[in-house]
Image (cartoon, rainbow, N blue to C red; front, side):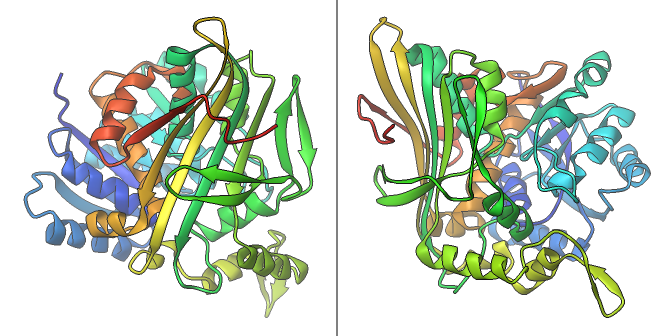
Length: 408
């Protein structure tokens, strides 16, 4: 079934740039795309680059200004353009207003990160799962967290369950950025979200409950195939919440991420002097959250792309009982080169690995493979068409059998 669809992309950062350019490549599905954001010049730059680097794309791109915190403004934008769906790659604080606007206008919804309130460093699915009945009643689909992690990592877990395991007991999601951007300190995606994530207490699932850890308290050296052995730290990541719900045989689930020593040193200093705080302070008569000021000082993630070298490696290790009833360990992963991403879509690998799955999720919704009313997490859907599309659209998947990379 060939879908020809108009979509709105909300946001114009590093991930939005990738989503837009992959939509331009996939122009038999995405025929008209509107990029809407607060700073329209950023959207205009993406469209100009599409014209320059992808002159043969038949997809028609336009831009608009929108305040994604404002439901009536979003509603008007959607009504004027008439899309089939909205791809939300704005800030996680804006998920609910965009979902509200989609419900009001009768269009489908996809995002790459779950909602978190601006004034509390806490992200969980409860707010968005609460939309289940409203989306179902209107015959609309909302797909939550369809980036890489969350997103592809959940499809990897579903693939384990469908093809390799009768029961998954131990799940380890691993995320290595073995790249070098040449800056003293910078974050690979939105600094505010990135730093909030890392400075929060860690959490992992064990024996039916959450175990809380100090930030970066638990670490081990993990070998990332084709890339490097890197020190990796346990932190909480949103997909753990939905995975342990949808795969109740899981006894323990953890999320690991690599950080270099220089990164941690900078972060410790910034945290020590209060620069990572989300509590607003009075500064010359204005209320400013220090982390928002820090975000303004740091390099924008999309600005890191040009000179970025090295690779990312993101994967999921499962341990449990195989389809044959025997103990099994299996690893599914992707390796992506930063320089390749820049050549293809003028982005670094962290933006690329998030943006490509968002385009794929939207395509699978529009072409009917994944379309079903209600609010869904990626692991609830068939991983096979997602895997096929990952291999086709620039994120080839590899598998390793019977080698335990993450130790107990």
